[in-house]
Length: 137
Image (cartoon, rainbow, N blue to C red):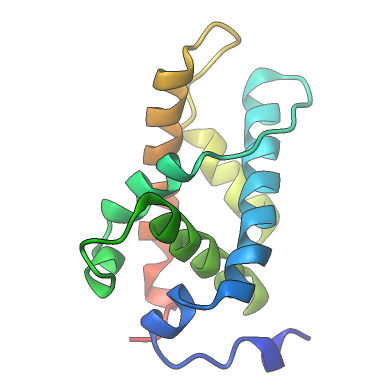
């Protein structure tokens, strides 16, 4: 269904696709909201901060495909574009992402924003690491 939109042949093409980043932004926020809902036991809607996603991608081998001087926003967009690509090529599902993120998200209603951001970055990093093999080389 999405094949015409994801004909990328390199990781760099994926990470620089602004359209994929826009789709990925919504996807990442949805999956994080679902993960947090699973962990806390009540529904919540969350927007993932760019700094969380930038920290996540910088901790993976994918980051070597980016300019080291990339700012937080560009790094976050790259992460979001990768997630959109993986989802649109049927490599990941919303459920798999939400469950994976939730498995490492050891938070409760009293967790500080800083601590949650750190745990979320680790969760997003691990999820990307688990799915790197699905990206073009």
